[in-house]
Image (cartoon, rainbow, N blue to C red; front, side, top):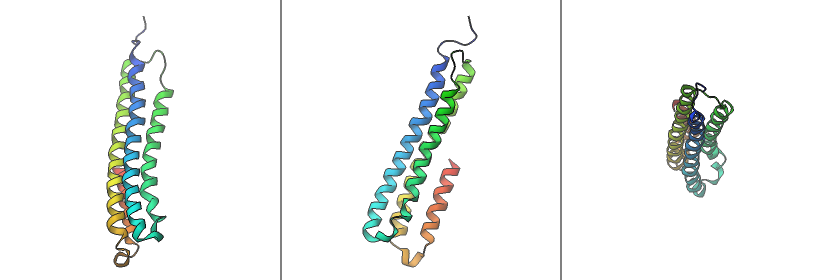
Length: 144
């Protein structure tokens, strides 16, 4: 009898799944929410569409983080995986996935707000709204 129970790889696989699923959900929400802001802003200021893609790209990167962690966890799954390592993989997957979900929500909300309120008032703000969008979005990514 080995020291590892036969069900221990299940928890590691659930960690890899959680990392991918939750971060992809966050990226999808961030992309959709920012996309509605881009669509609304492009009606009034069509020349600013290319600058408005920043939140969509930042939200997509969140899913890539989850994919990288899921691949790292999946590559370390073996037949005789010790139970505590399996729980560590589950915890790592949940932490990356749920923080990716929160970051995607925050990027979507910040991106939508800045595009709707900053993009229409470019004359009074200059290009400052775009700088705020990049700084706030990057801060949200790094914070989560």
